[in-house]
Image (tube, rainbow, N blue to C red; front, side):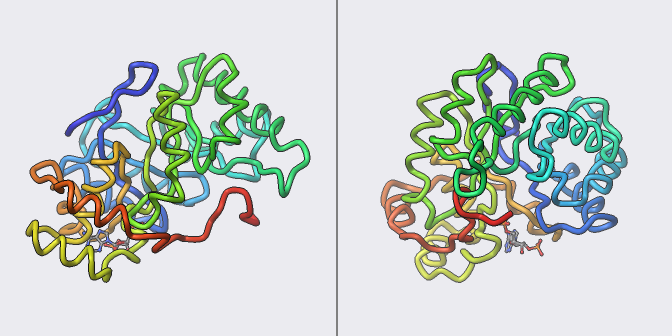
Length: 280
Ligand code: A2P
């Protein structure tokens, strides 16, 4: 498995196994066991996915040592703030049955349209994350769904975010370009959630045509497109053949023409979850 280097020197496997919308219990546990079998070494979950117990069980039953795996979780919006974040972290660890996390993220920024003191709330949450990081309970810390104006205050603190996980798939380039550029300039690795647009990419004629040309599936083309943009994709699947297929993306390349055609897919497949306007 290829890796990328975070700004604190930690290596992160270049594809992660996504678990958003995978139910807790056998679905997620079996999915993780299959994923680890096929070679995934990176798993992405969150308190809000309500599947951390099954994720922990899958990892335990996978037979791979905990240290061989890179596991991410996230603090949910209702737990923002200093004390609440510390408590949320402990609850996540308990559900996962871990004694540390590789990466912990702020799931969504507090935003100006909902909170007058949004910047302070994000700083308080970040302070708790920083403490947990300095205490060695988390190997790396970061954020999710942050735009440059949300990231700015955090960049002036003692520990800078190492990761920003955002919605990223064909059709999102223009919307996310400013965030991509900002993260690149500030040495923050961008991870992509829903690299297949939660399935919305699969019937796109341009993607189908390119997939036929390179003799791959549309899913593989989407995942490869993320990688060639320097974004770390987190494809979700509970289907063993797809789990396996989604990792087979390091033995082909999209040429400039293919990349350009996919880049030009404009504002397509967007979930509509804008961090500045979401109501959760
Ligand atoms: P399933 O989990 O039933 O296999 P995203 O990663 O963008 O959130 O997309 C996840 C959705 O895409 C799920 O519905 C998943 O279905 C489906 N999916 C994942 N990998 C593939 C693939 N290789 N081919 C087709 N569909 C896929």
